[in-house]
Amino acid sequence: MKKQAKRKQVSHLTFDTKVGTIQKKYGADLGVSPDKKIGEFLRERGYPSLAKMLQEA
Image (cartoon, rainbow, N blue to C red; front, side, top):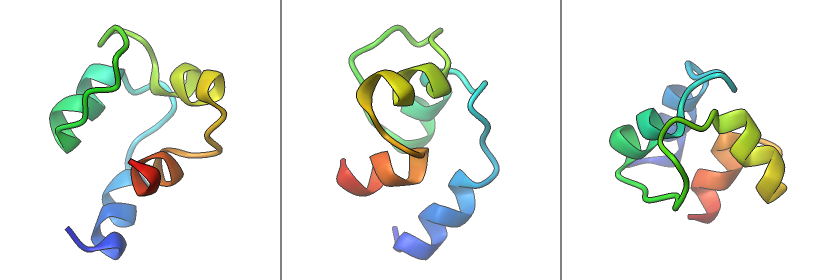
């Protein structure tokens, strides 16, 4: 997937989105409960945004 396309898709998500949704959409195993909110996950791991986390994944 092109980086530009990935960024466009990420912009439609909010920090209230559940990790399980992210894992399904991007095929990523984040190693946490699928019910956890992505905003909480990002804050705990020190990522400024979902886009940044996906770039580093």
